[in-house]
Length: 172
Length: 172
DNA sequence: ACCTGAACACCGTTCAAGT
DNA sequence: ACCTGAACACCGTTCAAGT
Image 1 (cartoon, each protein chain N blue to C red):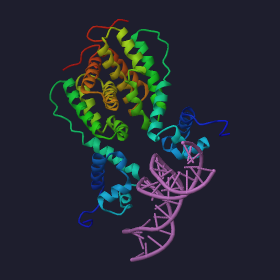
Image 2 (image 1 turned 180 degrees about the vertical axis):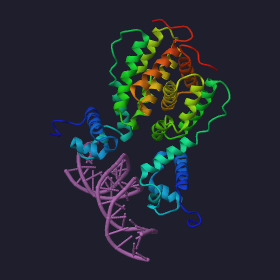
Image 3 (image 1 turned 60 degrees about the vertical axis):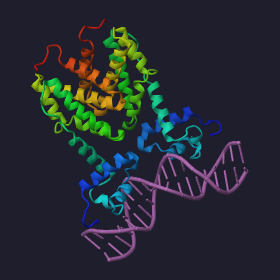
Image 4 (image 1 turned 180 degrees about the horizontal axis):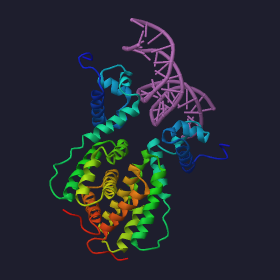
């Protein structure tokens, strides 16, 4: 069984998410994880230096799994779709990991690329687009941390989009 | 020494903050804390049911310690001051505790009272003021989680305030 | 009844001993 | 050289034994 199903970073990450979903953050221990994978307790250390490196991989995995919608609609509609996807991913993550995903959301290699692209297409210069994306990402993270309903998310998002549309309206 | 300086929730909370500041979140264990207070390891359990209750008290303490500025200036200026104070408090807290403070920021008994009051004085009805305050608090939490510079904070905040000033400008 | 600390059931990680 | 698991230095918390 273990021979037919050798360990790999991917299998470890998958098992970690399984544990997080079924039993939550406190269940994710190196020992419990090894048990779940049916390997000896130290085996995971061949693939990850320590627990922190594993957690970082989990967060990166979650960031890559953000499902961006089709690029239809005007800039506001596109940003709504992107941020809804970001919010969904943040919501699924245990609170302990959300802050770490937050940092990745503004990494130019991730969703930020799409976000700033949309903002630039609306007429913002690159620097303003970067700042605007950071603001939108920050707002979305904060909403998840506070944890209100959808009403709250939409209200603030529309006000922020209104503000970005100032003083002269951006192009559709 | 221990007799002249009996334990209390306040002393425990103070010692906990000392430990957080000097050695960080991972140093805050019930055993280490007792050692710092020079009491037997289980003494803290007379004042807090478990570690989670202590942590909740820490977060509440931080929330109460937010130093609101004088209520000078128009509504935008006042909100800038309040949110700067909120941001400072969030920044001082270890990342593991920020999410929990986030929830308190929208509690009607805390800073939210002042925040919504300012927004209502600007002309928003109570429900809109509540939503607007949640949006401002969420944005501030998110900025701290992402951790950009001051430029980023101000840009997004001004855009959000612009958006709240829409479609008809609010009163000064 | 209360104070105390030994003990339980865990951690993450190191490292020596075996192959 | 590599695989393995015993062991180290911790946790939060329970609970039995002492006063």
